[in-house]
Length: 367
Image (cartoon, rainbow, N blue to C red; front, side):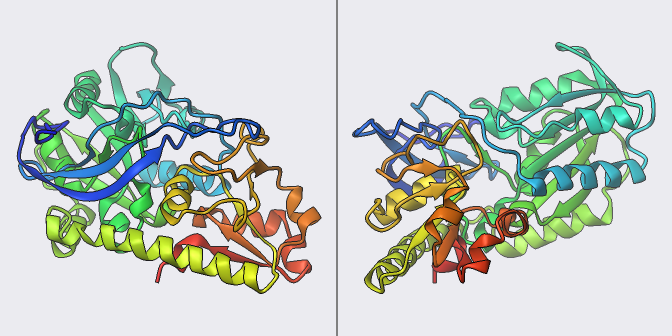
């Protein structure tokens, strides 16, 4: 295969920084009775040497996106984000707003209309353009940014929320890489994308969601960016978000994480202790496949999404079951595949700890 073409700047020079080999589509959940084998596809991350955008090399999959339950942490963060942007004076009552949402859910429109903003439909211009984890799903990143900038009113503001590449690197979140997610953003790369479309970074807010989520504000104004923007850009330079050697840590993290998970589950089985997973999330798919985990090591993964129950995890025979199984099975350990769910699930399913079980973050098993 030849060198990839950058999805943003069109450059042809870059570096393969993460290669997870052949992986099943993480949104393809076969029925439990479907023995497979499931189709698999290359899963690789490439860093453009020109603009610094980390991106998915190729995606031959067809998105299915089974409905998931919206985590309480995501709902709370959206409300917090809207409050912060409003406090900064960027959400004037009566302003028009357009949203580019994520196919996974999590709309902000209800929150924004409560503050007096007026949604517009179709391709109409808007004073406020909101994109919360939406643009990463666009295969053509250049066109996606141009569309958002093109709809923005002359004095409007673009609010773009994304999972930070710096956080992915710092926390070893290699399995954030998945089919259907075409871009992994740093503010450094986004600044270049915005500039090409006549926009400038204005302000930024950081949240703990997913280990490090950033909401940036961009406009056509002539002023200097706020201190949080400069601080985040400096922090990214220190972490090496545009340095292929620095990003190579993700490949090492993938191996260590897979080995750690398999060793833990094997030890629990040898000791005769019952273990179950929680959260049939996309990032669990690559982890289970890379670690070679099947139902002999992890008998089930519980998930609140009715659309996923009765199906199995892609690439393995592990069934997805109702959270009611947590009480029925009385596991000694529950592997949590989404750390942001911890507060929610421990409160919702106290029977796990009441029976002597413990919740274990899957991310903690990597080293």
